[in-house]
Length: 156
Image 1 (tube, one colour):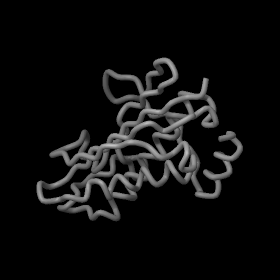
Image 2 (cartoon, one colour):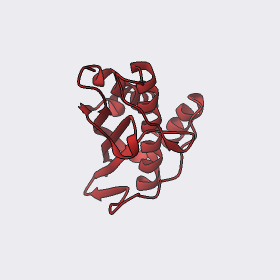
Image 3 (cartoon, helix red, strand yellow):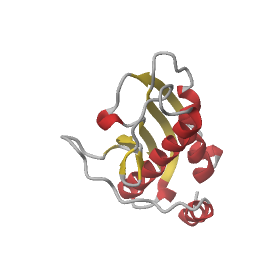
Image 4 (tube, one colour):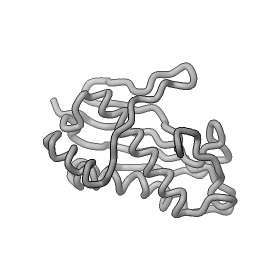
């Protein structure tokens, strides 16, 4: 998809891509291997700070979806930095989502839809539809409610 089309979609969605966040530990934000770009896990942030909480305790599914969408926006900012041009993305290959949740919470897949749906809105179904995993976990760094990593394929 041409970069201009992606820029128009982002603008229509009211999205401004953020710059790449500085890693908080001993890792890099992305690694390119051949035509694949692996993006490190990004935690949900609200107003620039970790979006803390636990699904099933003090965060509901709709709020978790909004947090996952916020993570997806940050992932797109990192992908932009990794590629120099989102028009080079041939396919969003996979998302892996970690949802900070109680043992009783079973809607991790619905929370993750917040990110998955945004990828399709931005890239269209041919490029944005992806494989994914959604896990419930006991805790995420800094108490964040959601963390997501992504793999994308670039055109030659």
